[in-house]
Image (cartoon, rainbow, N blue to C red; front, side, top):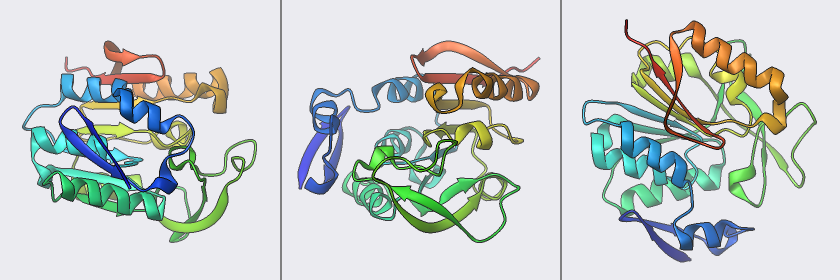
Length: 225
């Protein structure tokens, strides 16, 4: 077990999770730093926060520090990773909810969905246009429809890092959401998918904002006219 501290948040990760560049990113403070910057810039105490792809629970911890644990919900498809997120939230004194499952669109049928778990947990993903990610162990996980999550948890701020599935998930209706912080993956769905995502959010009144956006981390804010 290794322990890291970022922005005052302590993250414990088992040695088995420390793959690739993750140890260096954690040690240097670069882990999810652009998403963290955006969340700390925009989140207010009156918000409710939903994190799709909660990973190690870092962003949920940052959000809980602002809005309180009761207003934070994480969703994580990897079964072991969901446990890591819960452990880290508890370690930092936050009793926030972490749901195990993969977010799916309203058209999905069935109670489960196939998910590819990779040794590097942050690269685990649903099946993409080019089949499963390399070295993925395919397993069935609970299918969590976004509309049900929105109705139950009523988030005003949505964080999303789901390895390409955002182009399907975020093109659905997002009632009650005022702000989205998402990592986009043009390498997975190309310019056509990127345009589809931006166009769908624009149609719902969301505008790209440079405040907090950097590289593949993009912030959308709903325009109030």
